Image 1: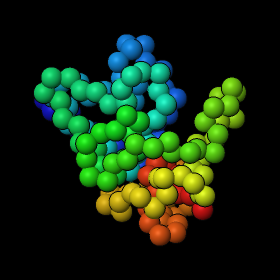
Image 2: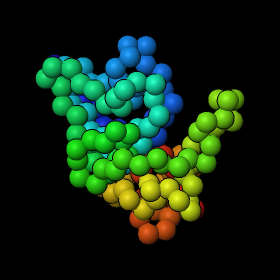
Image 3: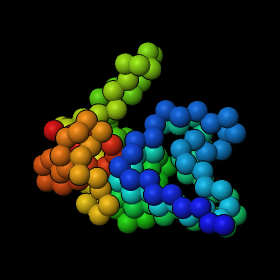
Image 4: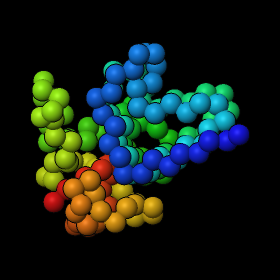
Length: 135
């Protein structure tokens, strides 16, 4: 049985891995995972993406710490407003509109019509990578 997952316009950051290998997404053998317009950044593990034997992960227009082969992918600090606050409840994963490399660098293909705040996509010149449409 093949399990499929589409991960679109998400921000996965600050995760902790108990296995020590993969902190963002791990696809079990036989899985087919498509990652689009997603930020995978700042996990405790050495790798953001991993897959078991026979699994397939395709990532495009995503910002992946350490890099990942795929169309439109980047490897640059997403410059969240505040992803390091000691109080986890006060962290702010909105994009910095002035400097984030994720602004206007995503793809409209498969992107939801609104972001996590209910703001329409796109705002500005294009779709942003991640769950937030910066403005």
